[in-house]
Length: 363
Image: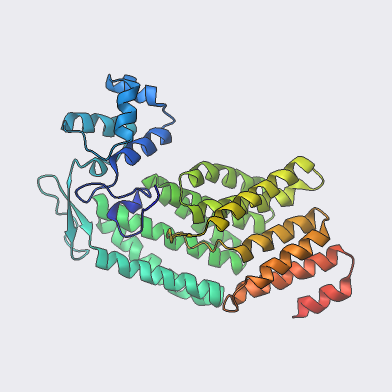
């Protein structure tokens, strides 16, 4: 799944490449849902009364099986939304009104202009979060959550799923903003709502993003067992996600391991190995926008690496990592600038240099 973007109606179910007739790549859809069921190719072959080779041929092809009965069987067996297998006709709608119209197998979807409007407002809210205060972002988020919640109640079918996906993303952001305001109960409540909504769609990117963001709240609360439980649950979904989100889940998991590692060399190694994997993803470049609003870059990676090395009592290496982060951090990311100063102060504190620590802390 390499070329998927947010410009296709089916991205609410997964990051599938385009197929034929305004549908996602058939083989990718079938393989994804088969793996989601924890089925091997031979399991699906036996259920269909076909050979394993036939299953692999279907999964490697973008051609739709001619028999509707075959598609219906696959849909039922793997719990695939029928619309993804072309069992319904997609009909764009120009408004959120008349969402109950569904005639002769036609499935209405919300037009891209309306979805783009929601996406633009979400992007604006995230930009406020990254470049301003959490409170500035929170005010606008609440209004959109209320609007989308009402719209979900009136919609059904694919339109409802489109709105649920957008609502899930707003709840993720709301939870992050609440966490930074130290409103932990609100952050956990919104985090659970995001996870529940993502689970309804069985979308790997929504699930992994929702889980890792709630895990970050647990880390803030110092509930490390709960954080690791969420992060380890997110990893299999991250493997099915695109590089920006995949790398960020690795990075968050590495952070959690670094905190609980103490003097456990094996856990320290796990943490640094995950950060190495993030480094490989970042160095590949071409980190396409995957709609998860994570900032996967050299600066963030090396700030996390510096913090891990500080915890591992490797302060010289931590200073070096932080210098790399500083040289790659844009001046517009004011919240990240503050985070870098905090990381720097923590290194001096670990070196028993309270004077330098306090000087940087005041900055």
